[in-house]
Image (cartoon, rainbow, N blue to C red; front, top):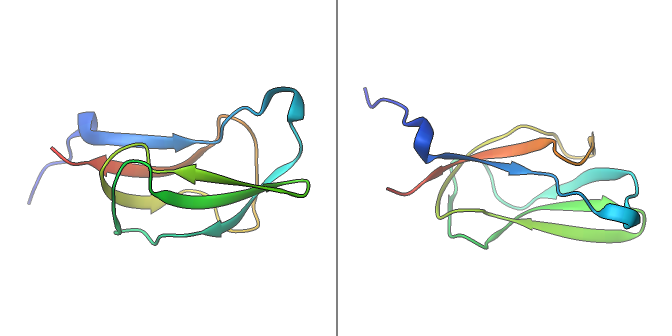
Length: 87
């Protein structure tokens, strides 16, 4: 069985929107766990007031897990997902 290399695991965090901060919620996951991604691929949509904010994959590799469900409220700094970066 392969061992987990923590150096290759990268977390996706909810950004701090500064003064525009409004209640945030996950609107839609665009990719399922296990999906291959390239850095910059759209992964999840957040809604804040009437605005939609796309979060992108921080690395190329694989989306391992969603840590927040759709329609769930989130705060800045919340870990949304975990990725395994390509070696």
